[in-house]
Amino acid sequence: MRKHFAIVAFITALVLAGCASNPRSYSAGSIWNVAHGRLIDERALFERLAATRFVLLGEAHDNPHHHALQARVLREMVARGRRPALVMEMFDVDQQAALDAAVAEAATADALAERARFDFKGWTWRYYRELVVIALEERLAIIAANLSRTALRGVIARGFDALGEGQAAWLGLPPVLPDARLDTLRREIIEGHCNRLPPNAIDGMVRAQQARDATMAEALQRFPDRGALLIAGVQHVRRDVAVPVYLSPDVRARDTLVLAFVEASGEADPAARLGQRKGLSELFDYVWITQSVEREDPCAALGEAARPNKP
Image (cartoon, rainbow, N blue to C red; front, side):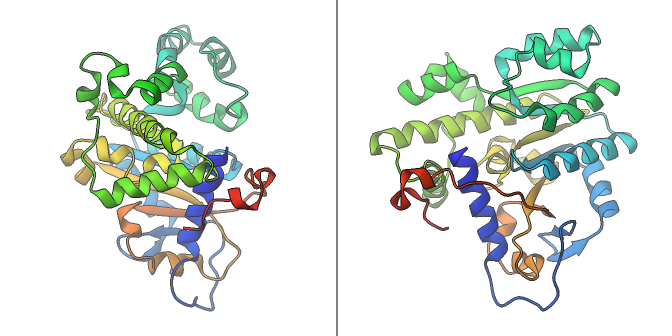
């Protein structure tokens, strides 16, 4: 959750960055087309999503408004004739067999979660239940996309070879990233852990993030025909350092759309500020501004020195 807090703060900083705001104020519900620098309506967004093979939705895990919109996106895609696989960060890859068995047996969403050993302590099931209900109703594939904790511990301790023979190369690990982007990823890892990571732990945590993103990308690309919808934290859908990096170049450039759900900051005209943020187009294709939620700063208990530096 500390990492989640830092990512929310980072995205809010993107909203607040830029020049003085326009007097108008865009409320929750505004949708910003980053490349074109303008607002669009929901219909236009849904049409664009339905026409794209791979759609990545970036959420704040604890914001129910984001989850409600995710369900809407999936329903709208289905209504427009799409049958995407539902790829979820919330299930580990070693849960896939149980997921497949539950789907084959026409289990209810709740029974599927129980059978697949959904992490009810780590994730809030009621936020994801509607997505699973839709997938079961529409007979969509439900795909586990996260590395297991055991695999992640191996990557942190021993490197990408811990994934097994040939797995790292198959997943595109380690990625070829410019130094500036690698520095960005390292900085996010450090700040996401309240600036308290021991220096000798940083590289292992960076590898873990890269391994998770590469695994999610592989899960998406298993469905070249029907396409797929990824549900993941906003830090995993960024075009500069996350899942899109591991997609094939053609898919990344022409067949992928990244939509980030961003909490309204309470400041005037967040959409205009988004448009003035240099480099935002390197992160997301669309930003949907939503209501915010109150949350405690998880670094506060560690003292002021532990707070993440502001981006």
